[in-house]
Length: 608
Image (spheres, rainbow, N blue to C red):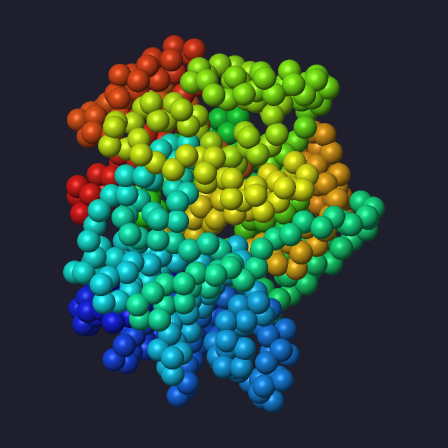
């Protein structure tokens, strides 16, 4: 993970840079590396993980300066590639290898390297600065342009410390946030602060910013049996594990986070970590501690379980809000933060199972229950008439989503993380915030690229570009690096994805069965009951917490108070509370989405 700041042709005296770095010191508390000339200032913060290239993230010669923030995982492949230009490539650091390839192939170097990184290349002859984001967007990247120059940062909070940064709210971001519970626009909630898509390179020539994509996922299914797919999955994960671990001097110090699900259990069975960790609650409905502890005993690992209650969760909520930089209401951020905090007392490196659901069809929305299959036997005209009528209605009722699914995927699917229906969100905000991009305008460009894909492939494609980048990657980064914990993600691997894109749909989802081939692969390593188990994920018992007077009043006072009235029709929010309290409809996640936005606004626009 780690963190960096780059200032190009803007004020950057020592005190300014120090103040900016202080806000993100959790990203790299162990050491700092700097580069500076009359045009560019780079500062990098690192975590000492006894990794062979710790402290060697910056390479400089008379032609280029390269800063590698994060990790290149296919180092041996890159060395072989660079050997055509540099006979002694095996002796070079990853940053030096990137410099070698860049000097001969320019931005094509982006297609050669794999991992989780932001690469900064300063071409001294052209005075261009190039930033390369990894294919999954694992390393955060934000930029802000002034009249004279450019600032780039790992976390937006660092920008607030620069005297040339003008802090303004982007009013267009609110409605999409209410729909998705996370920010999804490239222009963030801070006006003129942008992120860039994953798998892109950003070129700054001193005046203009040019962003180009260098890679995209393309589904091209091939015929194969489930056994063939399972064998290849196991082989590629073994390769990924080797690539990601071989340059750690002491990989045994890496711990493992465990849920009760197949992904993390499969990884633990293969990796055999000495330490495993999980987080849960007193309520069995929301806790997988027992399953995680049981599996830890099977593999002989020492297990630590963090039990979380409402008092502790709310005690550091403002800190979590601050760490996220942006309004973020995915409830799983809370247990993930406390889990990484617990882990950080033992180690600062952690195996995590991100990737399996996205690659192999692990989400509930990808499944096709028998009821949906039966519904789709109705004449298309009837299904479309019903679906369009419901889709355009503001009325929310049980069965609404079912009827909508009779329409083409492009008409109704917006991704995994949806909270408010768009019409309800528009009706809820005050006039100043109604001028926002429509959700269809956000999703349509993705669907236009893939008109001939299957329904499952269309869902996967959209989630890969929106859900994975704006939700999964942001949460995994912020909640772990907040406690200086570096994630190692063997399942989030480019070669594994390249195989997954060639798998037929039936080996991903078969009716109500998810991750078909992946579960088959896991049978080689797990007891039978574990391969069939569906994990809860990092769920949170918010619906019960909000039944406690203390927290219900606390949340109610914020979302119906004077600040809320600036953004929302609080009478509508009162209705949400009454419906939730009386059990007419579970509205706790909508209430939470409003609450987290207001907490964020207070943190960044009132307190700071």
